[in-house]
Image (cartoon, rainbow, N blue to C red; front, side):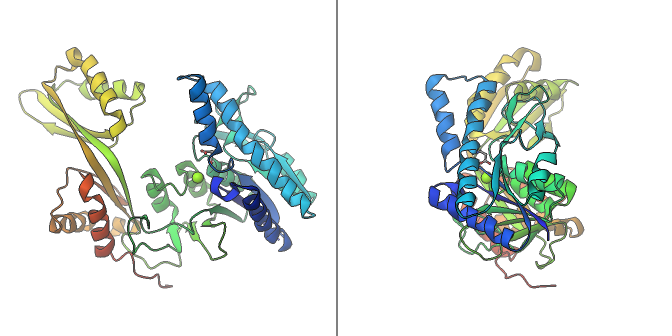
Amino acid sequence: MGLIVQKFGGTSVGSAEKIQNAANRAIAEKKQGHQVVVVVSAMGKSTDSLVSLAKQITAQPSKREMDMLLATGEQVTISLLSMALQEQGYDAVSYTGWQAGIRTEHVHGNARITDINTSAVEDQLSEGKIVVVAGFQGMTEEGQITTLGRGGSDTTAVALAAALKADKCDIYTDVPGVFTTDPRYVKSARKLSGISYDEMLELANLGAGVLHPRAVEFAKNYLVPLEVRSSTETEAGTLIEEEPSMEQNLIVRGIAFEDQITRVTVSGLANGLTTLSTIFTALAKRNINVDIIIQTAAGDNKTGISFSVKSEDTDNTVAVLDEYKDALKFDQIETESKLAKVSIVGSGMVSNPGVAAEMFAVLAKKNIQVKMVSTSEIKVSTVISENDMVKAVEALHDAFELSKQASVV
Ligand code: ASP
Ligand code: MG
């Protein structure tokens, strides 16, 4: 007998029928003799609807009230799922995040879990109940309701699995697993049977929406065996683990991409000690997320900086820089939009030099100009024109043989 944590995302609990389907999934594990905890998201797009309701009331809702509002979404699902389980003759109980002992820091809208007191959940499990927990929410020490950031139910599930020392955490979703790249764009994309925590963390941070990055962080830190799988099909999904055993050791495991990137170039900057900190502190204060940063030397005590931002932040970025024109003494700001970021990710890069070189060669062969580059130990990201994005991903997917079937080693 083991302990299984299951998580169902919004689309997997989007109707009464789907909630019944989720209940059946929980019952199937229970019948195997396991203890079962189920973490759920709000139904369908209901969190989006709540956000838009708030926007109809005020352009700037207070963060505390926003958390009060959004935390209601998950409560609808827990009670309905519990009823569905009871209807089938199973003992079930629903818990909000705070009832399940989920403590967070005092940050509204994007709180981190600091601690989980699992005693209430454990008591219920030992009585044989299926425990249904609201994802995405917690409570501060002072008793304030917080939420964990959009997509945060994954984090609730993995954190609970870690705290309960669960044997497994299954993330049920509307896709059958983690793919080599987005199958909506690349026909030959393949479902991976396994991927490492580090690779998944890179992909999640690069915007592969299938898992919340913090959930992967938790899984990695506490070695929680995770599986991303379909809530409608019974086939195996993708295992996320320390060393994926079922996958061939390919150098590149996946390709992530994202459009609507803008490159901002500030030239003729005073090359002072505080220039960089002034620019990036000012942008951070306005919540502008800067991604790739490149500094160029220009002699004469002058320097230049290029960095990338999401295109929606372009106007704000330029406005912030203009405010600091006197302190920074730059000549001009140029922006180039309609760019995309294409990244290759794979643990095999650590021990295989020349992967970046190969990536650049593949892009050059397709006449694709690289405008910015950034790397980590297991990732190479390039910024290219948005028009070339899909062509680049296809060429790289081909060159690094990502559509090849996995072979057991
Ligand atoms: N309901 C929340 C959201 O839509 C949390 C989640 O689904 O994970 O972001
Ligand atoms: Mg999600």
